[in-house]
Amino acid sequence: MVIPLSWNRPNLRCLRESVLVAVLSFVVLGPGEPSPALGKPSAGGQGEKCRRAIRPDTVIHECTAAILSGRLPMKGSAFAFSRRGKAYHQRGDYDRAIHDYDEAIRRNPRQADAFANRGAAFAHKGDYDRAIRDYDKALRLNPRQADAFSNRGVAYARKGDYDRAIQNYNEAIRLNPNHAGALYARGNAYRRKGDFDQAVQNYDQVVRLNPRHASAYSNRGIAYAAKGNDDRAIQDYNEAIRINPTHVNALYNRGNAYRRKGEYGPAVQNYDQVLRLNPKHANAFSGRATVRFYQGRFAEAAPDFAHALRFAPSNLYLVLLHYLAEARAGKQDRIALAEATRGLDLEKWPGPIVSMYLGKLSEHAVLNTVAGADRTGRRCQAYFYVGQQLLIRQQRGEAAKLFRETVATNASTLFEHEAARVELYRLGN
Image 1 (cartoon, one colour):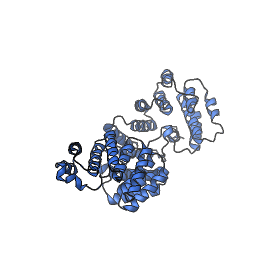
Image 2 (cartoon, one colour):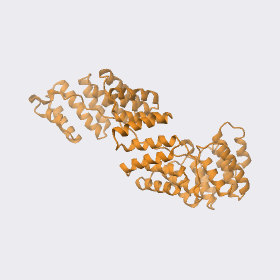
Image 3 (cartoon, one colour):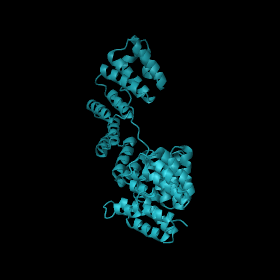
Image 4 (cartoon, one colour):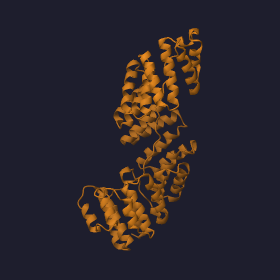
């Protein structure tokens, strides 16, 4: 029988499902209009070869030869440096790209694309403040660069400033109403702000422009899931996976959607696919472990929690769940629990729960720490983990009372809330 489960919104701090999102890349602009000076015979033909080259390696070779010829005029050499910088950029060599953009700007300070592309290189290195300064300069020189507005929006989004990001995407879309990249990024920003209706509208526009944009379908699925519509979300994940069968994010989130619906078989199948594609996907291990825990297959849940724990050894929630899965499977190993928490701060929540399992704190003392607390989540967790302790001791009636208290908190975003509902189902309550 399928146990109906309500939808869990992500709570990363407490090891809840992590929503994975395709990252929008920074667009590298073309290095301005081709400079006629590059093609003059005075450059020995090297300038023309630099201008016409296509493959990054060929661009680097030909533009280097043109630069070293010493026969290019100042603006022509600026173009050659900018062109070679773009090629290094495309190869992921951002330091060399920045060096060449520096030279291009020194030789032609009004080359807007060189500023914009240097901004993209800084952004790829994670230096968003310097990136934004370069986009500012590029847009002062050429205020009609839709890509520069879009890129500046992405930089603001990476800094967590979604309002300013959206302002920039709006400007990019004003200049180019069919700018799929800006529409997609604006959808991501609205989703991050919790405005899921606006997010869906933007993803709708993206897939109308590009029906094969797998990540737009995948992220629209996330938005529908956030609106509580897992069935509609699954339709979008299905489409993303049809377009790209190795779309890890869509597979993982489809697994989460099936898990929330209580359809454990399909959920595990999706997590299995994720782990075949990425054996280091910690969230897929924890998702599959969660399903096994719900199913009461504790001996199978324990190794998956252990795998997830390898990627986050200081996550006390993972430590707790690994211990609990083993304890429910008949292996109550306090020594291993003590070792796993050595050096971790057990004074901070959920440390008191760990201390209870170590025998250093009573169940009553744990419940007292949350008595009258405003933090619904902590009360939910305290009731659940004390209830688990009582179950391990075979005190089923008392455990059921605490699981009912867990559910009564209405902290439905938490694993503990859903797990308590499952425990009550198993206990016949």
